[in-house]
Length: 425
View: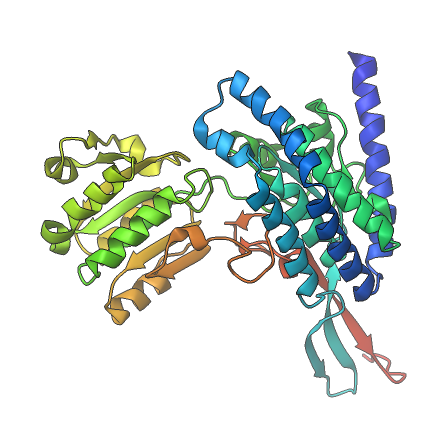
């Protein structure tokens, strides 16, 4: 076991060293080279569809044999539409403005010094993810566009799929004359490799991004010795205000919960204003039940349909990632905001109302990374925000918040231009 651990340490240290060297090249790569690589990656993914699907079938079969739930299988599953989505996402990233070197602030001091704040890459980004194979393409593309090298460590459940996708990314880098070590995938499923990444690989990793369940993110946040972009859970709410259009509210509630139940932007709790409960609660509950969603509700919600299960205290703070939702009647907007503050995860929350003043108050007071008015929480996605893709949704308040795209994967430095000035006194 000791030799095996030493082998993993040596493997990971070598990966880190190569990533650091590649990051130095990428930091000064011309935008045209990165764009060419991204376009080539997209073309190669499309051309490799059969190979990627065959690899994914192996992962799906193994996951099914282990008895993984349907929501897990949905996150793991690839089909032609999702493969095309990966390719299109890479092309969308290619079309974005290159953030590296962008001057985001400039001023002149009284002594004549010219000062600029200029975007720079973060360096080497380590991404630890579980069952979503598309993270391989999204993360690789976003890191490349922002001038960062990336080390990808996918879960064992998606290993075949991730490697097939990574092969396409590598081919794109080579075709554009960029270092193939700019996007590396950890070739072992040994869990000690994650521990080595969290230690920082001898100072070569500049930031860690976890994509996965609560246990993974908690471990990363507890053990990491480098900065982390993370969210623990996506406990997202839809609040139906008394001035909500009922048809709109029903459509949004069902979409927010049921479009894809296993993503972090899926609604996990529905709050209905007591002032409209008599007219809105039963149709909303019926629409969810008819969409084959299990409803767990408070006493008033249980009273409108015998199929509603009683909600426990734990249900209000649970991320189901499945076709289950908790429903509660609340006494007005302030009560809804208080409930979200107590049980939410600062991810994504939506209000449905035709009252603009109430909507503005909700958007101002709810301190989540994403707040919406009359729209589904399923829009919590970098691609839907015009970012091409995302590495994740950050719910912290330091550096990055919300969808983490190319701009969020940069830092900045100050460039100061003088004409011989010296400082006195």
